[in-house]
Image (cartoon, rainbow, N blue to C red; front, side, top):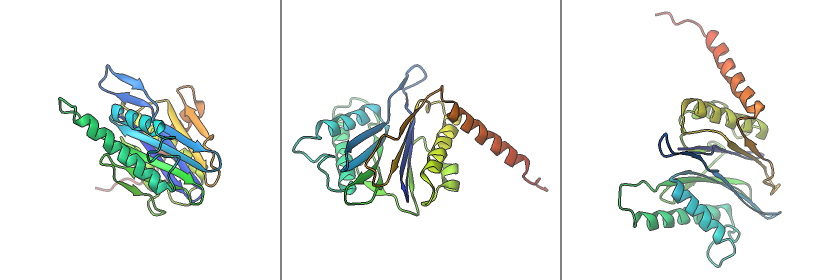
Amino acid sequence: MTYCVAMSLEKGVVFAADSRTNAGVDQIATFRKLHKFMIDGERAIVILSAGNLATTQSVISLLNMRLNSDQPNLFGARSMYEVATIVGSTCREVIRRDAGQSQGNVDFGSSFIVGGQLHGESHRLFQIYPEGNFIESTPDTPYFQIGEIKYGKPILDRVVDYQLPLKDAAKCALISLDSTIRSNLSVGLPLDVLIYRSNSFDLSNHHDVTNEDTNFRALGDAWSKGLRDAFAQLPDVEW
């Protein structure tokens, strides 16, 4: 399993993902779930992936292979909506191909979060379902999650709004991931965190969070202590 979260805010987009895959306790490995596609000054696209690893790898491979082809591709798309359409149709293509060859009851489903900006339009964020259809974020619903979403959702619901500063959004994403890691063994370090500032067309603000990252560890410890302190101050229930 995996966990990915992205937030489309007033000043840009924040992306975060873990890198653990799990096919049982004896088959745990690390595969990156954050993928970048960029043309300087023209487009900056980030894709987060979750679900069947073979499906997600095939989708990302096809998207890369077709970048300079005559087929619809991410570098030829004229809008982020068209980017989402291409990712969705590629996902359908891979699932249809592999499911037709399956001899067993295998779930080929995968989901994606696609965000970024093309020159001439604002930054946008989409969640793509295994069927290839998708929805777009709004100021009222500015974030999407895929994968193991339930453990990291409470802080997002309480903290995230459209005006949230990007640095605070990144901190919120890290706490959301830390909460998930503490509650689910199938999600784990290292993490990818990327902050995209609107109109920059720059994806270099990308951070690799590992076991040696003292800032991440301190953030998680401070959040846990804050929760314990807040709990201790709650009034007793008079039964």
